[in-house]
Image 1 (cartoon, rainbow, N blue to C red):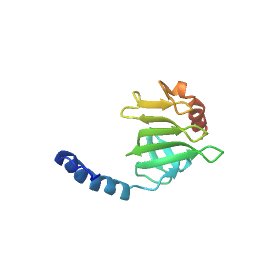
Image 2 (image 1 turned 90 degrees about the vertical axis):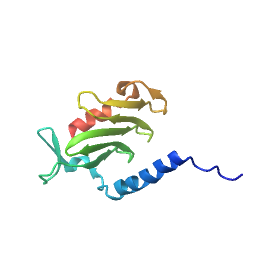
Image 3 (image 1 turned 180 degrees about the vertical axis):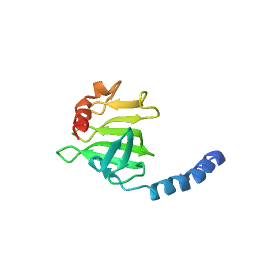
Image 4 (image 1 turned 135 degrees about the vertical axis):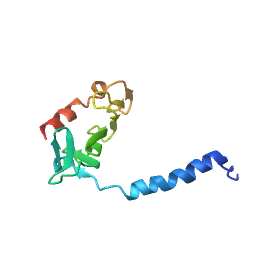
Length: 131
C-alpha cells in the first residue's frame, strides 16, 4: 500500500523543527556526573568554573542503572528524570519555578501514579542530598 502524502501544515512543522532538533542535539554538552557540579548561592556551576552550568548531570545506582539525570540552564534547574533500580522510568519533572515543579510519575512496575511519594523514589532524593 503506498504511503499517504503528508499534509502541508505537518510537513512545514517537520521541516522547520528538524534542523532545530539536530542543532540542539549537535550542540549539546556531554553530560557530567552530579559530583562535578558546585552549588553556590542557588546557582549551579561546573567545578572550577565561574560560568553558570548549562547541560545535564547524572548519577547511577550501585547496580549500574541510571538513578537521576538533572538538567540546568544558566545555572538554574530545569528538569529531573528519575529511574527505579530495575531501570524503569520513575519520574519526569519539569521545573519552571523551583517552588512549583510539575511532573509525571510511575511506580517500579511502570504504572502511572499521582505523586513522587507514590513512585517510591524518595530514597533516591535522600541519596542525592548526601552527595
